[in-house]
Amino acid sequence: MPAVFRSMVRVPTVLWRLSNVWTFGWIILIATASHSSAKALPLAIPPGGQGLSLAFRDARVLSEELIANSDWDAAAHRYAERHDQHYSTVSKVTGWFYDMFQRPGPEAEARRAHALPLIGSDPTRVPDVLFSGPDFPLTADAKARFFGEDLLAAARA
Image (cartoon, rainbow, N blue to C red; front, side, top):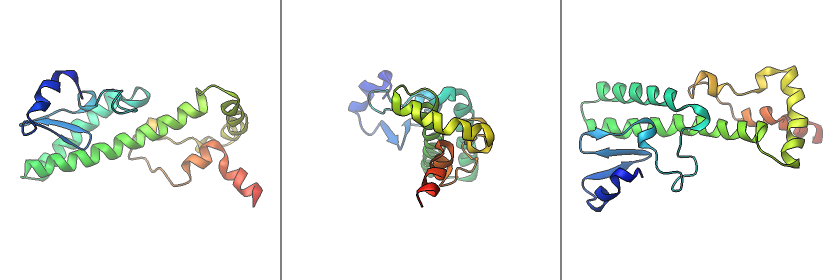
């Protein structure tokens, strides 16, 4: 939770948490302001340099929900659900990118040695979420294709 709100937590009726979104009366914190401290939530900071795009998305989604629903509490809850969904998608793929391109160690080197030539010959293996946004379809086999695990499984069969 952001440090500025720690003293307010003592009054649970004043500050409450909707999923991954903080509210205070009629105020809803969005984007980076709404994320817990990194100690409380491992992936609390915007993943992969996506903070500004996630902030714009949060503003758009919140306004859509407020326009579509006269019950602002219900609109805030729906916004929180949508926020968590798109944030989690971007966070998941950012983790995959870290594992592919930045994670150190022999296992990571072996993963890169296997997957990068496959990506070089078929760029559609790279999930496009970080460039196209969290609404880009992320298929069930996206991670397996990215890491080349689909071909390993086929070779074993």
